[in-house]
Image 1 (tube, rainbow over the protein chains, first blue to last red):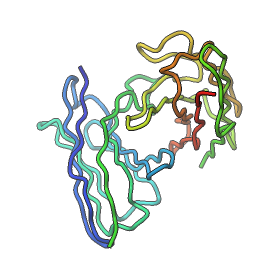
Image 2 (cartoon, chains in turn brown, cyan):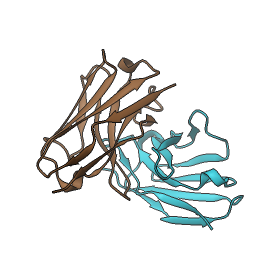
Image 3 (cartoon, rainbow over the protein chains, first blue to last red):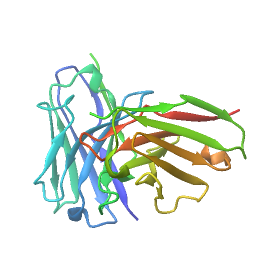
Image 4 (cartoon, rainbow over the protein chains, first blue to last red):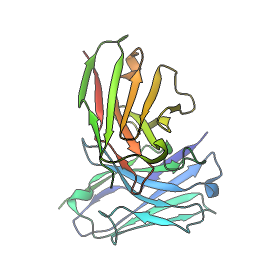
Amino acid sequence: EVQLVESGGGLVKPGGSLRLSCAASGFTFSSYSMNWVRQAPGKGLEWVSSISSSSSYIYYADSVKGRFTISRDNAKNSLYLQMNSLRAEDTAVYYCARMGLGKAVAGTYDYWGQGTLVTVSS
Amino acid sequence: EIVLTQSPGTLSLSPGERATLSCRASQSVSSSYLAWYQQKPGQAPRLLIYGASSRATGIPDRFSGSGSGTDFTLTISRLEPEDFAVYYCQQYGSPPRTFGQGTKVEIK
């Protein structure tokens, strides 16, 4: 069974930093691109960042570029998101999501974790 | 970036009724790379449809997707109690991948 478990969320002051982790199991982690997608309270979904299976390709939404860094450790089956210079508008539930494998589904998110809440407030 | 506009914002229906949700793109979605997700309160989204019309693994056949170019539709043929949720469309044909703002299907 595919499982994605996020951790590391919490309350942080504006300008502060936080590192999110996502532990993956039940599939060959090193074969899949992975993503972070966030959802502000009561709002819709926003893609944040993607990383390819071997970390060769990394992409960010404009809203987080230069502040967030995505990384992965395939030996530990783990995905990370280092978030610096946090702003109030970064407050959201952050989901770790697996990207579909195969031409028709590459770009979809076929499995999601339960999310971790990040609150940026003074 | 491609902007996706979903309508209506809220759909009030009774169990057993047919639900028709719309997703309109600001420009053509290449190769019909359009997906639909379902999200229930307090839960993560779940992939329902990819490639505009293909059901994801384990998705009941009462869910169907159609459309191409800029206009896409998700149809739920007969609403079950567990189908009342928020539905999002997502395009993955052009970076950045974007979501619509969601349609809430609520019990009338």
